[in-house]
Length: 385
Image (cartoon, rainbow, N blue to C red; front, side, top):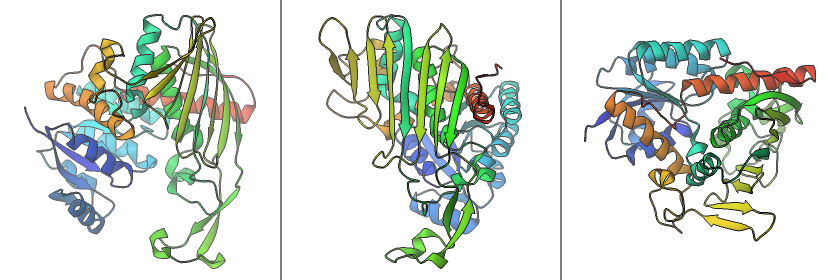
């Protein structure tokens, strides 16, 4: 099996998650990483057992041995890094959002197609095995005509006014936070499994903490200490903590999505229920190996993730027997497995399941419509590209 050399840009939370998933594929060599400066890059490279490291991602792109680049940096850096990587003739896997502006995302879509480079956005939630099972159930008409889809994505990591992260700063993350950060995963998942498209949205936002307290020094500095008022700086917040969005899908289906980053006790809970003319299905990410199936005239069912129970098309992304749970780390592995199959063949498959730059562009179109709806307090139609 041919070994593929990969470069990783960014080593916060998600960079090492990419590295771990890639190493599980067997034929991937993490050849180099880049971070914000050479000292940080050196420490990260030593911790992750990577031989080459750079304090400037452009130096990484000069390494001709690297075929693929993973972009795992804060949002405002994605566009330029992806553009530079494509122009350097690299395949690119990018964290979402693909860019901050629609115009930038469209440019990246067109550049990737011009360069004939494999491209993907890390919408990994598609790759929980039971999500592909739901997709197949829809396609095989087990669920029937879809009436409605409703659900939420809830977290509590920004529950206190002293909780702080770069995502709170719109210059770094973009004009939307909760919708763009977590709502984008929910919407991508729902469009993927249902085959429906979101046509119109009506949104209502809330920012419960208009001002947050930003630590003046790295949080690690305060380990084991009690912070004092003078240890913080008040920062005005212009992105949403919470949003509810009414949805009009095509084929006359309806929906609603709620997202929140201030829901106590919800660590990272994605939930949806899909109501169809034959049955309903419901699923939540904090219990990802079970799928609830609801019926009107006889008993409901709870389906376990098990290769012997799912449709044959689903077994491709299951690696363990029933009762052996597969969860968040496995989703990235399965996504990358399909992307790297195309990279190995140096050709985009005729039918792909993984999210591409076009899906990244779609996310920006959805978020733009939702932002406009919240601002105007009106239904807004989603732009098509």
